[in-house]
Image 1 (cartoon, rainbow, N blue to C red):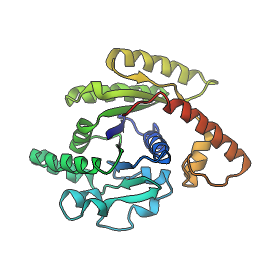
Image 2: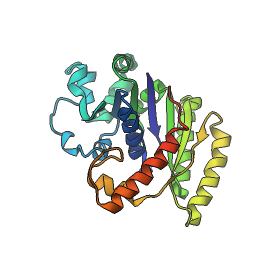
Image 3: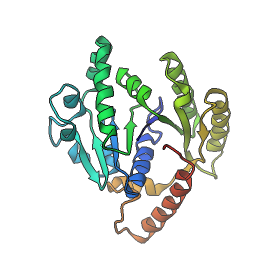
Length: 261
């Protein structure tokens, strides 16, 4: 079992989209996959057209599990075959409790360890902001992916992420993959940003591999608007169907380069 996190100190870079695609990819292979949303917006639910489940019940959030008011199975929300999500309600309050009482970190670790006996992969989706819960979950992670938008703000976000790890004494060696996102061969800015990012990665994350950049594709937004994952076998109009197939092939080549076992 592996615990895999996607993180970046910059919003809107595609963390939730990437982790959703990767998690669904493994689930389609028959692996049991769990995604824990450490983001109160629970953006990962939108990837699977499950936004209605965020407030479906008021007592099946992760916080209720942490305080002993819910059991492990009570907070699991199935969204696809072999794929489950866990949502959060108030991570700031939970982080405040963790800060005041560091012994409660054992409860988080115990919960994750217990889930690890049921799932092949546990993914964690973070917001761009950070708190004590983020630090604990990053520390528990076996593999960390940094998703970086290919523009000047995205590259700044990568540098800020590295500085955050250093300031919080988090293990930089756990950063195994850097995912450049939003590449376009017809635009100069993404090319320059990718070059800067590659050089910074060599300096700051020597154990990490910079993956081939994900291209900016309109099909991703089209699918998200419909609440459809790229691996959902649903009927689409011809253009979207063809573009989905191209995206699947691109992702298959990318995912071959990833080893999280």
